Amino acid sequence: MFETLTERVSAALKKLSGRGVLRPEDVEAALREVRLALLEADVNFRVVKEFSEKVRERAVGAEVLKSLSPAQQVVKIVHEELVRLLGADEAGTGLRYATTPPTVIMLVGLQGSGKTTTAVKLARLAREEGRHPAVVALDLRRPAAVEQLRLLAEREGVPFFSGQGPVEEIARRAIADAGGAGAEVVILDTAGRLQVDQELMAELVRLKQAAGATETLLVADAMTGQEAVNVGTAFDQAIGIDGVILTKLDGDARGGAALSLRVATGRPVRFAGVGEKAGDLEVFHPDRMASRILGMGDVLTLIEKAQASIDEDTAVQLEKNVRAGRVTFDDLLVQMRQLRQLGSLESVVAMLPGAGQLKQQVQGPEADKEVRKMESIILSMTRSERAHPERIDGSRRRRIAKGSGTQVADVNRVLKSREQMEQLLKQLSGGRPGRGGPDLGRLMGMRPR
Image 1 (cartoon, rainbow, N blue to C red):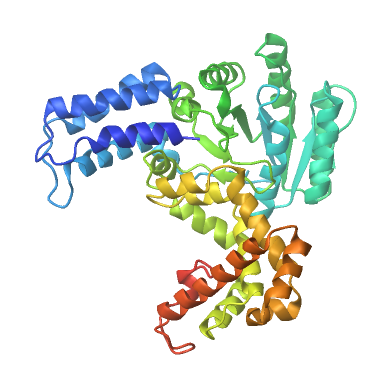
Image 2 (cartoon, rainbow, N blue to C red):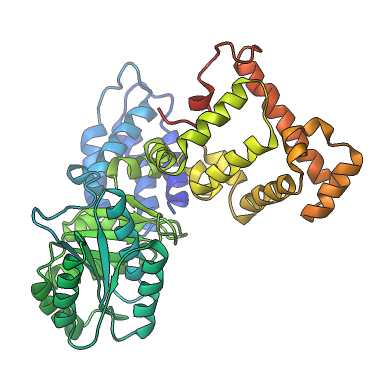
């Protein structure tokens, strides 16, 4: 999402290299580029002005630290100010639970912002944190929305409630029924409109009072840019919100909403939706998001995703195979499937520091298509061939290519890749399988520390 902004800011800061002291004209030149990049990213101009003044105040005339180059010094200042802008004091707050159950979370926002899918994502997150969630459909003007929430909840095994009549009465009954069924967290999916209007706000105010909402979270579409800021301000003034959930951060929006909402509403961005799946919801960490914007990656989030997605027993077994000096196609298949659980290749690479050039190589659907092709080739092999790749001769390669719908050249590339990986791992373990060497499981990211 922040690709263009990252490129522009990085290019602006790179021009400062080779300076002994940060002179006012040096800082001004870099800030001018950064300011233009932020404005083009649809960041509110008042936010850009305040941000620029803060950076200028800290950077002009500052002596460069001995261990840092001038460019690194400015990057450090810009990073710290971005973190402050995004809400450093509310870093990683996640879900907040009531002292006495049930916790009632009310989702509000315009139609199409992603409230329904976000309701199920929050329910899944609550369950992962050891709570028993339930969802309630209150968008009665759109029957499809009720059915969508029911299907999504059923898929995730989350209790679903709805009903007929005034939404305040439905909410009261649903919260009582959910509590009786053992639910500790009840998430209300409310109605939206195509635009802010008084009727919608009045309904939400009545609903909030009737439900006794623990928290009211605004679901905002990051791709709406400056309009998201206007919507956030309107909802906060009318009903009062406790935080923001930004959706569609995996899209090609310019990112201005993420940088402007916190300042415009005074409310923290609490979560970020990064995909359509129920697990594609991240707790919003200002410091990590600032690092992503500056092209520094987000290794901590990647580690957390790996710990949640990768089966440790399978990873340990895979490590044993590697230590024995062998990499079979079954091992590769396990790695590929675990990698897919982390998200697309592009999203994974985006979290790696300094991976800008590599990200361009895995951008778009073609990279994921190549991974699927490789998996298809491996699945076209027999169990014996996957365990003993050296047995795959010319006739077997032709059969595998035909079975996977690929060319023999594709099969040859897959075989060559496995050989190269095996040779590399043997070198990393000092050429002595099973005799010390580095911790390959952690080195390959298969086994979390």
